[in-house]
Every structure is written in C-alpha cells, then in structure tokens.
Amino acid sequence: MVPSRIFRLVNFSVFVCLLAVTSIQNAHAQWTYRVASDPYIRNISVFAGVPAPGSNTLIVSTLTDGMYKIVDTGNQQTSTYQKINNGIPIPEVRFHTTIDINTIYAGTDGAGLFRTTDGGANWLPLNGSGAGALGCLNVRSWNSDTTPTPRLLVGTSCRNNSGFYQSFDDGLTWSRLGNATLPDDVAVSSTIRDVASNTFFLASSNYGVFKSVDSGANWAAANSGITTANGILNAFNVQFISIAPSVGVSPTNLLAYVHGGGVYRSLDTGATWALSETGLPPGYAALGGIQKESNAILYIGLDRQGMYKYTTGTNSWAPWGTSGSPGNNAQFARSLGISGTTYYIGTLEGLAKTTNGAATINSVVEMNGGGRINAITHDRDTPYTAYVTAASLYKLDYIYGNCNAGCAPMDNGITGNTIEGVPYQDKSNPATFYVTTSNRGIFKSTNGGALFS
Image (cartoon, rainbow, N blue to C red; front, side, top):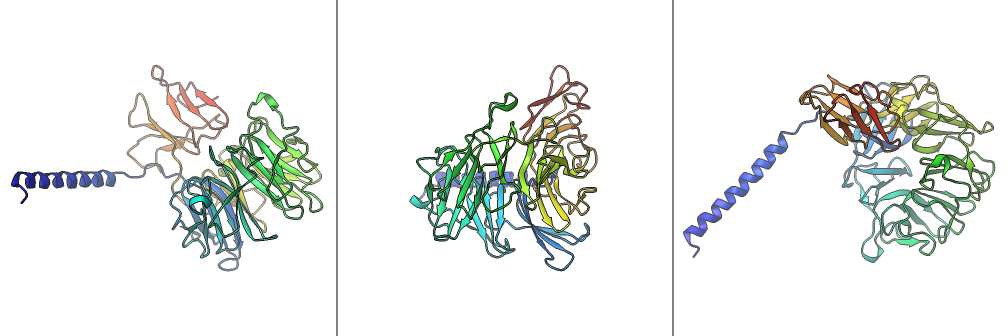
C-alpha cells in the first residue's frame, strides 16, 4: 500500500507538471507575428498553360518556408499559392528539380534528399540507412544518369563526409564517389553534367572547381586562372557554375561565379579560366546562379543591383531592363523561371514577374510565409522602436503594432545582403548605427540610419 504522504506528494507533482505544461501553452499562445517577411526563394520551375490556357503553375523552393505551388492566373487578386511540405521536416529547402509537375526532387539543408510523385502532396526521404546512408544531409545539387544503369547523383556540403554521392536503387543505399580525389570536407555548391561526354564539373566553396571525365569516379582540380583577384583571399569560393552559350555538345564554354572574385569564363573545358565581367557594376556580388535561357542568353542576379544579361557574340553583360532600379523588388533577384515571354523572378522579398523584358516588374502573389528574420534590437532611447534584419534592415516604430503601418526599410547606402545580418546601435551615441552583411562587410550610419556607408 502506498503511504498517504507519498500519494499526496505524487498528486502534487502531477499538479505542478500540469501547471507547467499549461503555462507553456499559454505562453506560446501569446506569440503573434509582427514582421511577416516573404519566403526566401531559392529557385523556380514553371509549367506553362497549367491548369488552364493563360495561366502558369510554378513550383517554388524556399530557404525559410519549404516548398510552394503557385498558380499564376495573370491577375494578382486571383493568383493562389499553397505550401506543399507534407513529409519534409524542415523549412530549409536549398533547391528542387522537377521531372514533371508531379515528380519533384528537393534537397534540404540538414534533412537530405526528398521526392514527391503526387505534385507535392506527400514527400518521402531518399537518404538510405545504416552503412548505405547518405553521408551528408546538406544536399546542394541533383543529377540523374541512365547509362549504363539508372542512378541518382547528389552533391553535399558538410564538415565531414561531404562530396558527391550515387545511388543505384532509388535512394535506398548511397556510396561516395571520388574518395581518393575529393577532400572529405569539400563543400559542394553546385554541379553540372555534360551528357554527351560524361563529364562532370563540381563547384565548391572551399576548393574551387573540380572536373571528372569518368562519370564522377575520379576528380581533378580545375582552377587554373582563378586567382586572388582584388585581394580577395577566398578566391576558391566558387558558388555557381554553368555551361555557357556554346556550339556543339562538348562543354567547352563555361561560366563560374567566384564569391568575392567575380565571374570567370573557360573556353577550354575548364583547363583555364579568365575574368569575364565586362559590363557588370563595380563591387558586384551575386545572390543566384548563372542561369541559362537558351544557347544565346544567360542571366545573373546581383545583390541589390538587379539582374544582368549575357548575350552570345558580345561576351559582355548588360542590365536587364529596370530590374536593378532603387526600390524595385527585383533588385534582390536570386533565381529565374521562364515561360515564353513571361519571366518569374525569385527574390529575397517574394516572387515577381515581368512580361516586357523587365521594363516593369510586378508581384505575382503576396505569399507572406515564413520569411527569415535574423536579429532584432530595441532602440536605446525609445524601447518601443525596434530594428530587425531581413531582406532589408527594417525599423519598426512600434514593436507591438503591425508591420503594415510604421514599418519601413532603412537600407539607404547598404549594398550587401542583410538577410543574415545583425543590427547594432552605439550605447553612448544612439545616432551611430551598424549592420552586418553576409557578402559586403559592415556598414555604418552616423545619422540614425538615414544613410549608411
């Protein structure tokens, strides 16, 4: 028999636990949105004329709110969006690849590779298990191969067990390729493949470019000509690589973006590289890859400077319409989706489009999903005023109010990406303000944030 004193103690403990749970639930219920940024869009796939002529269906991956399916009817008021994340456990989707509107692969930052065969209604992981598990779950790229045997290929980025993996059984088991020729900590940022020559190129953020001529079994560095340009020490931080406009099937003409170093071009299948940035603005930094529209046209999205267009024959870049104009929502351009003369632009501030070559750019639909707010600080003199870093540095006049009123960007003079930045106000002199960026260093204002330099 349990003594009554112990029984009372047990009852009291249960009461305390229930009270604690209730308090947690009540505290959680008190949280409300104050700044609802749009999702940080990574890339876009477009299906023209779906579900009806005159409309387009878009599959969108975001780094802050998972996967979306958007139907653009041509009228912002009737265009719709829905989240399609069932089965993907985290919101950080680094990229996606569509086989068709129903079959989609998605790579995540920390949960591995996923696939849906029902248009995003349900997702299943393709990460293997045990000795056959995918060794790194930060997936950066996806390729497929059908010769001689169907296989999946992914590039990953981790501190250890990173690199290039293959699976011959639809993701049930994985093995790492290039063990003797790829460093264990290679941080893959993107990969491309030329099917005709079975040649792979791998861009990494810590070792530069690698090339394989035997379907990924062995790799060799291919960085000749990529230097510490402009005094930048991380010249081998190659973020994006793309097959440029070329004639024939061999990837003789390549473009690569080196973060902090510029755009490089190779005309000899990666044997040598040289800067190819004619027409690009000084001090540019790219948010997205070098994206190919056709064998004649490529684009690159620059941080706060819009998108630039590269055309065969000129070997130079030119601003694409008004995409870089101050206040234009496409100046944060990161990705591009194309359907005929309609271009969809993925930005740090949502999804935009143009139907007239970027002369005018409009929002498709207000997604208002889980945007990234990296940091918050209260004003030294006015505690109800706060500053947050998202796609822009924002000032909230009244933190307990709604961002639709009294919430404005204060980014005049900031040319870097603040979505991962931190704001700081000087304790002794509140008019002095600092904000960090992920690609342009620290900016300072001495007039309360009216102007940064």
